[in-house]
Image 1 (tube, rainbow, N blue to C red):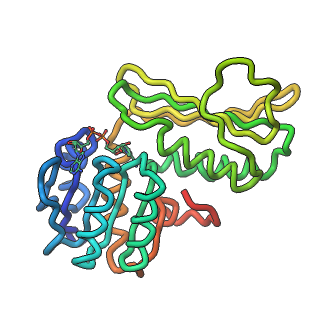
Image 2 (image 1 turned 60 degrees about the vertical axis):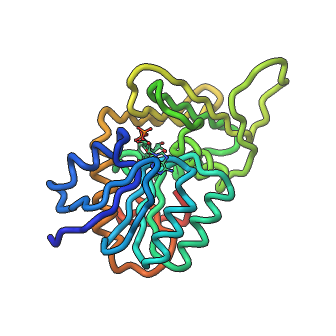
Length: 244
Ligand code: NAD
């Protein structure tokens, strides 16, 4: 396999360090590591990878489009404006945007889609996520993606947590609950609760390596693709009509 030459934004972070450590074994050369305070440059690289903070989105997109450099974005928690900037850039360059690069979570996306389609409106959907104490955004990007998958199929409002006298549950609402603590890499459970039975789909990540390997795989895959917004499900060859 040819080596992919990469510029990495967020190189000093937890994911950045994991990517740097795993890159050589995955035929990726990180030749331009950037972190807070640096001017991001995407000249003379094959792919730009971003695992930093949502605030970097505009600069990352501007630099990648300026040099026609494909982009792999793993950062989560983007605002509507930042998502729009990414969407706009994907008209000019290919971009993989994935809230989760692990193979298992992408299977969870498919299973959730299937369960939401098969189970009727009498099964109520709630999503639980737990992450380490240092995680900055809530809910997790993965929980957001899971909620959007269910919402696209059966509608309903997203309800972030519950407190007070709220009355009965709306049958279509999708509850999302974020738990923080310790060194949990990332747990997600999707609950479909019906009368007399309950289906729970759970994924637990025990190492950041799984996300890093997926992102490095996406860096190989994105080269030579036509401009568009892709997901990890495209990289893995999973067919879907939904964005994840
Ligand atoms: P972290 O806080 O450990 O690291 C983030 C790094 O980015 C820090 O070194 C910080 O200084 C740097 N940074 C912040 N803003 C920057 C900017 N504007 N320009 C350049 N560098 C900047 O966080 P982390 O655990 O490594 O996670 C990083 C991001 O990746 C988060 O959004 C997290 O939710 C996401 N994440 C995604 C996946 C996935 O599979 N998609 C997996 C894990 C984490």
